[in-house]
Length: 68
Image 1 (tube, one colour):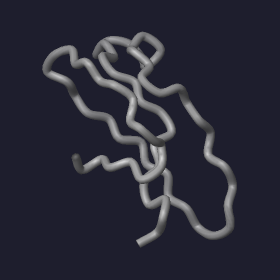
Image 2: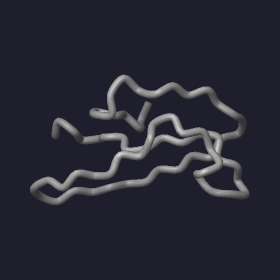
Image 3: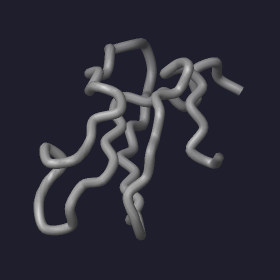
């Protein structure tokens, strides 16, 4: 169970379907990955929203949970 199994690098909400992320609401600014020792996997996750959502930033970028 790695300490930083999930670390959030960027959160943008309310991106219009006809454009790109620069038109959304940035909840957490982008943080570039820091090189470390060993193999790492980086995943971009994109969810379709049915309506606008109010999303606050998480308490920490570390131990971010995409499962809820």
